[in-house]
Length: 588
Image (cartoon, rainbow, N blue to C red; front, side, top):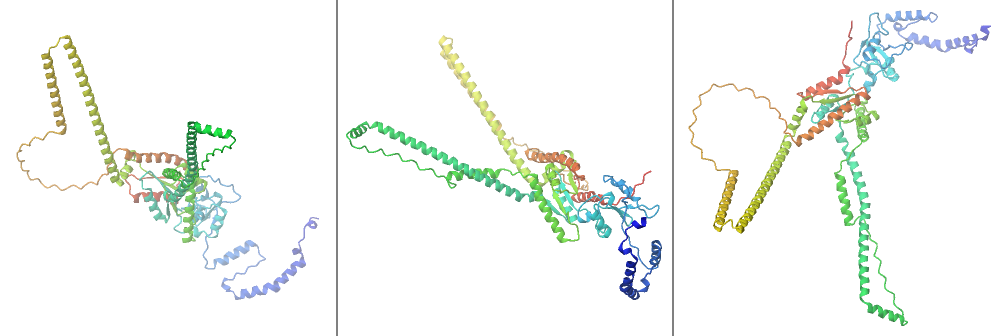
């Protein structure tokens, strides 16, 4: 009953099977026998297809062992589809330990971790630093590799060697170098570019054409707005002047009519006599004022407005910065593909002192432009004295000239203030003397009127006053001469100094290296301190955003007492540290 219900295919019917076998014998069997006869019998393996598949595999392997063949190493997937999936947020160390014991080829065998660790080899060869997924882990030549996508897995399983040969693993060189003023950012950028064959992108230079374009747009807009407003303003003023002039003329005409009544009376009498009175001629209306762009006052107003607009500073939003940077990065990557079609397709760029704030970083993240490493040059000396000395050494002549000019100006200002104070004091003294003289004169007059003072006593008092005044004048002259400087006393002849006794020659000590001094305090240094303070504040905020929105951990490099070569070595070590081989760490 069950067999009667089964579906019978046409291919399973006996007559159809017999027909197919006969067709195979007639068309294919003879051709295969001829091919086998022509083939080298040493490398020909014949098996009985009627045997079990396990027996066929054993016979095949036994026959292959007699050949001189080299077994090929093939990648092995370490994660079974039927097993529970490993979480993607698993720590790299824990993931490596978990995968090391999967699909082992011997009881005590453990897969070793590779220099790629969790980075996808296929993505890294293309120029992208992408973390692999645990379910796409494979082993090849006793090492563990974690792929990032099924497409990458397919490429790696097909032929893994192109993604593992030197110089890989190599950083794709997507770097950002930032730091306070005069910390050597640009120098380090060019050294890293020479090491990794990359291109340095200075946003200050790249943004200049865009700033110029925005400034021209702003100036053109100001020109158009000022032109329209100035034409209306000048036109209104000229019309107002013409109206006032017309009113003045009409007032004068009315005054002339009132001064000649006889003529008006004569005209009235003539009109009464029947003769027609000629109409009074109308005052011609003033012609409309025409003001265009070529008017001198309009040109002057537009020119002044354009000059003020050109002095203004153009502020470029972060989106424009990132747009310019994206265009340049695409150009760099296209050149990279043209030079080496088989090499990496992405990377090969270093940003010099960009981004500078969190808004610029957010704009980069929105455009999916994220560097692999951010390097920050730091100065841990007290109050940044190391970089301050470096800044002063580079600009010493200019700073000294500014300090000298400032001190000369301050000294001149002090002299002017002292002279003004002296003149004010002298004026007050003279006023006081004048008041005393007037009081004494009034007292003398009172005494004379009262008869308390005779003429002889009056003359004696006048003589005493004149003597006191001359004495005071002499003292003032002496004081002025003392201020100007008295002549130096002649130097007395001194005894000849005793002849020095000959001393033993002492070997000269080596000259210590010159020490760069700190610049003199003043407004010249305050600008540098302000720029450094602005950087410290922006960097604290930017660093928090970088670590919070990406997997990038900023690299701090100390610049105090370190040469450029030492800084370069430190930076390379920190950048390539993720690709250094690490052995297993066994714990108790």
